[in-house]
Image 1 (spheres, rainbow, N blue to C red):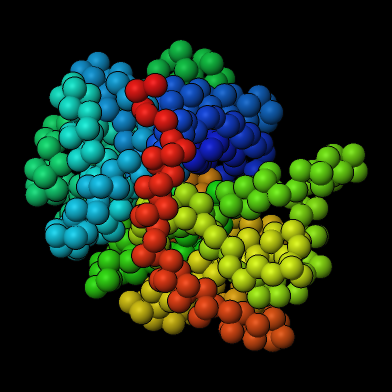
Image 2: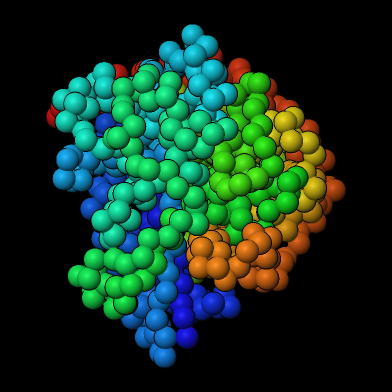
Length: 516
């Protein structure tokens, strides 16, 4: 029997799933790593830690499954977008990985936004004006870390680095290339203007290839460590955003995919480039006739984790004693509060925000607190705030792509019945939850099958997704949300005038210098 491993290199951990060719899962593994945030706006990871996590995850799934009467024929990759690593002439990292959450280039993104050049670059590349983009990270490094910038021989993202480590081949597929802000979305080639402004040369960037491009063979020492054949194919795969959309079956234009994991996003495929005149949405090519348009959100499940740790210490001890999942306990507490949290609104901008604000200085807040509110209200307001934010992105998406035909959702957030119901009630639409919630790894597996000539139509991924659960909106709930959401949106606009002020205060009085 032949097997395929789908890998998802995320922000906080790497997941590996081993599938047979019929899509049956035989083993799973998940390995975490550290996100370094020692100074304000920093969000870095050690590429060696992430590489080792992929190695250990593959080792684990191979060991668990024992590969009886078969072998792994392909390993296919999903990965976080917008990462940046500088390599020397010997392909060794001279920086850690700057992740999408790193906001230190905020000054340069703000300049591009103010002078209008950012919108022009967005219309060429599809990358919104925000410090998440490697284009803006390069400007920051060029100006703030000139020695590092001059010493860099190559600029890559985490997926390209990992695949090079295994195969000695340095390539970049077009969906990841698009997310750098250095690729022209209409030609799917590196953009001369973007490279010139960022100060990089074509030879410093990997060659661009298709998402189904495959590399045969890996270094024998790694094959031996993993317990697989060294003639395995490495399939480039795509960004986590593209694959999580494909993996829920949102292939058809007009079908909306919502994913709420650590971060979150609202996305839809279109058949040609789409530009938002207000610059609120990205647009990245994925494969011929498939462009992904949508809005990424910094503050998804990570905000629930913050509330879990910051507000409910004693309850967490109770959960341990009861041998109950502490997050499940919090959702049960939140269920006791009515929809709308009795007028308590939470803006979930704990790590700045990408869509819809595109403001790295954005900060979170509770609004409407009174003496009748409890921590139960606060935890429900946190969950609702995450969904309000997604809905506000959907309003922007609807302006450029039209009313969605259907809504599909995946991610840890919608594994709870409360999360699913809030989503259906806020959107006032049926929400479909596919059985297979590991959508990124599933889609990576499917792209491997396409690469190997075992599948030829992207829409056929539907036969691997399994059954679907449908949540219907509750009228008494959505009437409450219908009244609150305009307040949420107006308030976010009002507060935006002070985000930079409070962010500057925090940088001045709560941060440490990077040299310490």
